Image 1 (cartoon, helix red, strand yellow):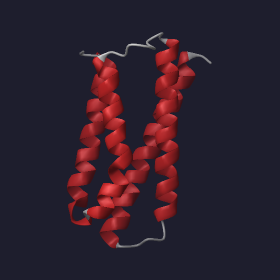
Image 2 (cartoon, one colour):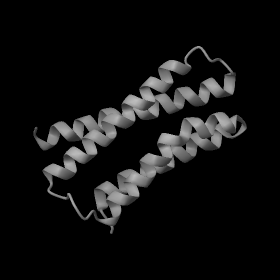
Image 3 (cartoon, helix red, strand yellow):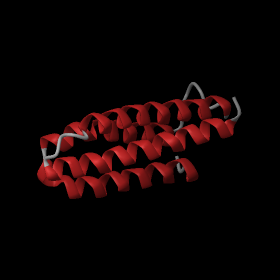
Image 4 (tube, one colour):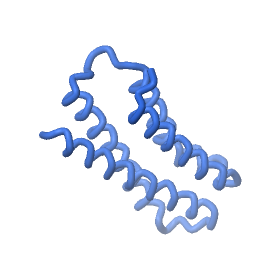
Length: 118
């Protein structure tokens, strides 16, 4: 598959992940559980597509084997965002801070990918 395919897959996963997290924050804040399964599905599928697209790009760019630091940084960020719904359910009173933190983590992930500082 061409590199652009993996980039689009990565972006689609990103959109799904953040849509799911925004919905999860609203669900927790309003205590309406009717959308919880949809958020869970969007979150899981979004993370899968993010990782699939990311590793596909790494393979196409021949960055497999010994990964640079920015790749490890992104993996840690995606791990944190993967655990986010669980953490949100444990501390629903912090949902606003959680949402801003998730956006900040997404920004840092984009920075790492674009500038590859280390």
